[in-house]
Length: 231
Image (tube, rainbow, N blue to C red; front, top):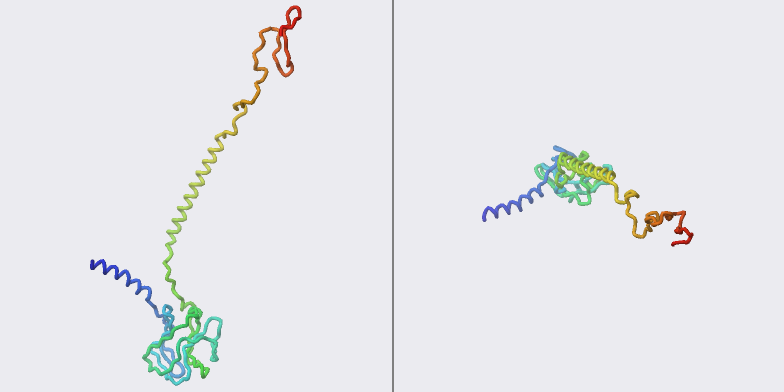
């Protein structure tokens, strides 16, 4: 009972940890800029966050933010990008880890530049370019079957089609060599019951001077020595 319960717990819990596993992508280490900003920049595509480790900042700017630029927009100190998370409201001594969540309406793969930007002073403290394809969401769908399996399936299907074609051809050849019931020769056809027998098939009269009825002779008679008709 105890081992069965443990197996159920493992089956339930292990997938949870697998599904929520995240991976931080290193973008730049040891950056530095105005207002003593410094640190190591990471991104986590799974949790949609920008993370700065060993972050330092003097905290004196009136309105400093993590600020990004998307594909189709150019970096400018006058804006044109998108805010990421809340304003930086205090100083950091260089050992803190600061996280800011990327808004849901931003496609992470479209981000080409990350900055710390002061909205009030229109000043970019630090600017870091992000290589194309670095921030790509990994698919969680199952891996496709190996190509060899697909090829095997295709070849089996081809075999079936070939066999079917061969069988059909053989059947057609057999059919063509066997006369159908509708192609019975005329001489072998059975006359229908409504067909009138030919007059030539009647037995000849008993008299030796009678003519057999035909298409020419439709009437025949017999006379005696006195030329009297017998019939």
